[in-house]
Image (cartoon, rainbow, N blue to C red):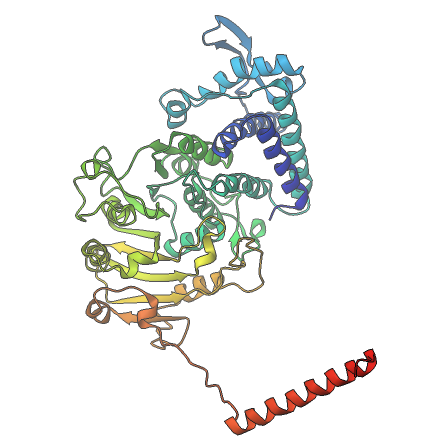
Length: 520
């Protein structure tokens, strides 16, 4: 969790951008991402230099040598492109230096052929005035100084930085006009635990936004390879470890950071933000691309081992643009993404996807076909029903998580009725002591051993034959047995007597009051 001091500095940063003329939160977070990236590059490079100096190993700084500035016919020393160098410049000189030299250097950092290089090609560093840049750099330095102090108190730097970045990204959804609905991190963590991605598997999000699911999967794999002494339990009860110190094979590290995570989004700005987010967290070569995965242009079938997604709800796509490989005859995106996820999974691949409740019980032909697909052509393992406040303040829709495996056979489906995700279900989303999240993970992991048919409980199995008999309805309310608490009432004569006594008492009080006021 971020401290109040860090949140305060971040809010100041937002206010500076707003008052400085950048009021679109999507543009603001993109520009802030560039600044965060510049600072983090400098910091990581200096740490590597010190580490090499101490160990005697060879390390070539990314700021070593010269840089030919495109379009200026000028060569500068890369050392001048460091955050620690240009932040000392005067405002006007600094803005000119960052826009014309530092930012072009950042754009070509990973090479033109990489996803980062391709999508940064047309990126623009927007800063309306020098004072905004100066103030932003000062605030970002303040934030990192606070983070470093707090990391000494126990929380890892990377985790605090992740909290900070998530707090920034939350502002995108709060505007309500960009169509971006951030999935809460604890929900991402829960879904990752349910499908348990492992080292060597390919992991995809076909509507990745800022890359939250990919980052969650990365941290889950790191935890699996982090020693016990470097693990910790976060505020939501998840055991985490971001070091990966038990992973010593360089080839496996390369595989993890360069050929494991794949994301797609149809918004160029979100692609850039997603790339920045993953790179800031240590994924050196993220594979996030600009693609509408529902369109005819996208054909990545039978490719991925694991898919995690919270695709757009209540959207639609032009019928002529829909991928011809889909079996569902609909233009509704929440249904088409189920088809996309099914097609993209390898045989035996696992998926956890968030869907609106309407997908579970919708009566249209396409709704039923979507449910038939994940029941008849997959092993539908679980349906976790979530309360409607999980996505507040951005949306109040009721949702569920579907967990399924491509291929196999559905014999029974595990249902869980989540009542609390550990936060209040109003717009404030305050932290609560009670949460079903850790119980869901525990119950999920032992579900076969603790097979229960008690429909009054929070979780239970339902045979697939019963589901098919109910028109493939996957709503938990169809199967959960409601427990009614018997309420006993007094006899009518007793109630009338009590009311009469209350009336007499009320009249006495009125008389006493009138006497005191001298009105009797």
